[in-house]
Length: 497
Image (cartoon, rainbow, N blue to C red):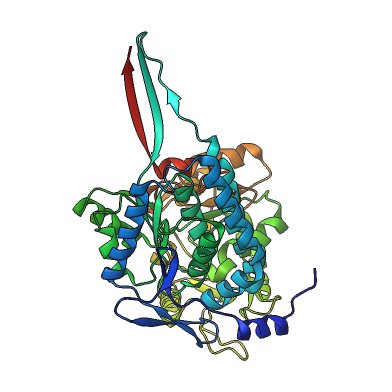
C-alpha cells in the first residue's frame, strides 16, 4: 500500500465532499427551519461546511419515522441472521471508505490523521463487524420451573433509542452506541455533537447503502440545550445512551424521570490515576505516562491525568516524562508525523489554560507547557503537553476533569496510600498500576474502584470487554456482549400445561 504524504492529505482535503444535511428516513434532508451551523476545522479555523441545524420539530420527525418502522417490525422482527448480514455489509462499506472517513474525522475534530487512519476508523469497523457477528449468539432462556409449567425468557428490543455522542471520538463512540442498539433490533435517533457531525452523517448514508431499512437510523445534528433536551424528554423514545460530561449526564437522568422513565446509560467524566511503583519497568511506564496524559490532546475521558509516582523515584520519573513532551508538540493534523493535534475550540483552549493557572495559584509547579501555542502555518486552537508537579490530591487541579493535555504528578509512599488517593475522587472510569511485583500490582488493581484498570499497560482492552465507569463516571456499559443487555428488555412468557 502506498504511503499517503502530508501533501497528499492536503490535496484530498481540498477535494473532499462534506455531508451537510441531516439523515432522516433513509435520505438527506435540510432542517425544516432551513437553519444551518458552520462546521469549523479546529486546527485551521476554516469553515468546512454549513450543516443542517435541527430543531425540536426535526427531532419529532426523526422519532416518528423511527417509531413507525419499529412498530412495523421491518427491522425489529427481521431474522437475526439477516440483520447480521446487513450490519456486516455496513462494516465492509466503512472499510472501503476508510481514508475518506479518516479525513472527515481529522478535519472535523482536529486530531492527527495517523490516529484516525490507524485507530478511530479501524475501531468503528471492528465494533460493527464484531457486534454483527454476535447477533445470532444472543440466546433466550428457559427457567427451572415446576413440572407442568414452562417459562420462556426472551430479550426484546427497547424500541426507539436516542444516542448522544461526544466530539472527542465521534466515529468510534458512535459505533459503540449504534452497533449493539441496531443489533438488538432497535430503531435509533443519533444526535452527534454539533461541533463534529461529519462522520455520523456519512456512515448513516453507508448504512442505507448496506440495506438498513429507511427510518431505522436517523441522524439529527443540533445543540444540546434545545434539540438534545427535547429528545431526552420525548415520550416516543424508550432508551437513551450518552457519552459526555457528568454535568450533562445528570440532566439526562432528570429528563428521564420527568418524562417516561426511559432507560438511561451514561459514560461520563474521569480523573483517572496512573500509579507507578519504584520497581516498574521504567521505560515502559514513562512512555505510557506520556501517552495516557497527552494522547488526543488529553481530550479523553480515560486520560491518566493523575500521575501517582512512588516517592523514591518521584523526581527522576517526573523529569523523564517531561522529556517526552518534545515528542508530543502539537502540529498540523494532516501531517502523518503529528502526534498531537488541536483542541476542539477556543473555549476549550481557554478552559484548559484556566485550570493550569489555577494549579499554579494552588502551589503546583508547571514543568512543561502551560501556555497556549500556535504551530507554524496553523490558525486554530492548540495547547501543548503540560505536566504540573508538587500537587496533592485535595487541590482542585487534581480533582476536576480538565479535558486537555494536562497531567498532575502526585507522590505516594505505600500501596495502601496509592489506592486511597486513587479512590479519593468522584470519578471511577479508568486507571493503571505499574509494578514488577505481581502481588503489589494485583492488590492495587483490585483496590481501585474503577471500570477499567490496566496492569503494566494503559488504554488496554478491545471490543470483547465492557467499558464504563463507577460513581459519577456513569452507568451501563459500552462494548462486549454486556452492551446487548443495555439495549434490550427481558420478557417472560409463563405457560401452564
